[in-house]
Each structure stands twice: as C-alpha cells, then as structure tokens.
Amino acid sequence: MHTEYIEQRNGGYYVAGTRISLDSVVYSFNDGQSPEAIQQDFPSLRLSQVYGAIAFYLDHKAEIDKCLEDAERESKVQASRCRKRIRPFGSGSTASRRKWMSPGIDPLPGGR
Image (cartoon, rainbow, N blue to C red; front, side, top):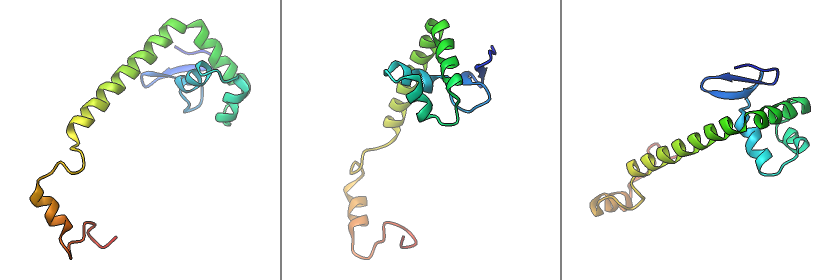
C-alpha cells in the first residue's frame, strides 16, 4: 500500500519518505493534539504530511485502530514475558547478598 503521504513497509505504516510511524501521529491526534502541535513534535514533517497522515488514518480508521490494538496487545505480552524472566532486586539468595555487601567487594568490576 502506498499513497502520497503514507507507505507500508516492515509490517507497519510510515509517513512516506520518513522513519516516523503513522501510529506516532495517530496517538498524538487521538490525544487531542492539533496538526500544528503534532508538526512541532515532529519537526522533520511538513504540515501537509501531518494532515495527509491524519486523512489516511481517518479514511482507514477501522484497519489502523485494529493494527494499533494488536500492537498494544503484543507489547503487553512481551512486557509480561520480560517480567517473568527478570527477578526483582533482592530475590537472590542470602549468601549472594552477603557476598556483594562484604567489605572490599566491588559490585562494579573495574571500579566504575
């Protein structure tokens, strides 16, 4: 899919010729920002590109909203997986805590 203002690549929508994702513009728009305020947040965009991105979103609202919902859902799944892999601070054994708290043990190798 390609329009004058939006292109689809790498599984997402982007403002044509930029690295700025359509969802970045859409989230700002849905938060109530004016096109002029959005353009100030993304100074590499021309105001016409912001209006073009908003027009594309409004013309394809159901499809784009579904993509955003899917991305948010996947983000929550990934965050949950990360939390399961990372032990909270202090959850290690008492012996390992004592080792790091012992005088003369530098917790940052190289003395940083």
